[in-house]
Image (cartoon, rainbow, N blue to C red; front, top):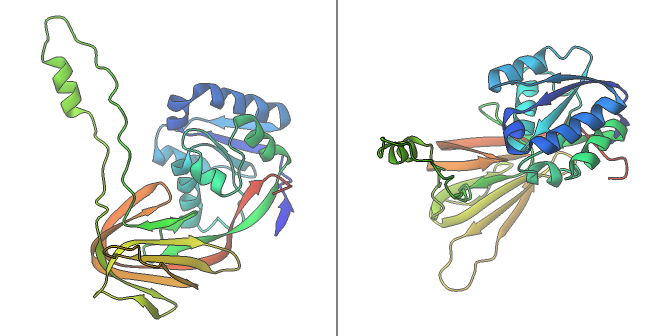
Length: 275
């Protein structure tokens, strides 16, 4: 279902990572939004300030300028505050645009900003787990490995030959989650799709439509690739020994058991009218 995004009072929350990643796209988005609506800009420096800004939005419609993590963070904050159902969100994706684009948001800053101004609210399903976490796009078990990026050059400091190696030692390194086979029990609406006696290569869960999630289980096989096991349902429970999972852009775990349920039409995202 789609409804008009009527409020022309916007709270534009610009994620700090977006400002560092692509300042030009951020500037373009701000210009388009400010020209078309009464936009109040907010530049939070961390998750706590981000959450406070959302909590103090008043009657303004929130617009997130940022990547998939920023969008997921906004949904999670509103979900925890039990305000998600009545607060349509808009996003201008900057940085990693994959999640937003998979939900129907245009990838370019100008097109996405115009969709904020001229688009309509569409209700989308959400996966909610038993720890009150949320999944907007896709859940993956085990999490896909994070691609390592080339290290930025570290300048040498005259008289301090140890400086370069110290900076590289202290710099955070990307996490590379294990992607080997696991032994998991996957249940959909109480029915077992695969049990602990059969190794699993991968499990994916995606919120679909009308309150039903699509589940795909890939058993481990030797030689020819095994046929994926497919199921649909409203609740998905995974049990195993210390498994991790990727929910949208974040990795969680290890856990031994987790249940996700589909919350039908739980949140609203403003999308182009022709989507």
